[in-house]
Length: 93
Image 1 (cartoon, rainbow, N blue to C red):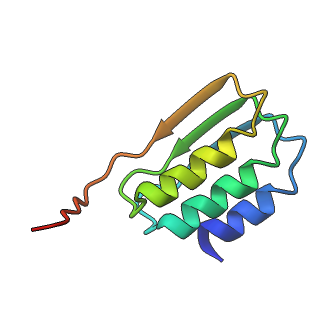
Image 2: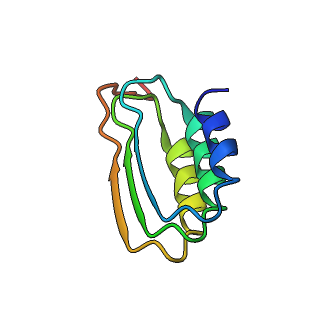
């Protein structure tokens, strides 16, 4: 289940207007972040969102999926998004 499961549950909360999620250090990867974004995409009444997703394994693909979902939150007026990473990935060494 993980973050994708949480996203699936949030997809049913269409009247949700305020949400704070602190998912610090939960080993959430690209799939989980994208699933969370997909669920939040259905929360069209969301106006205040705070997501603490730091110290997870969210890469470019996951961040893109999360962003795509948030783009559907047309009533979002306040967003706090913390994606600090401890893990550095180097390619081409």
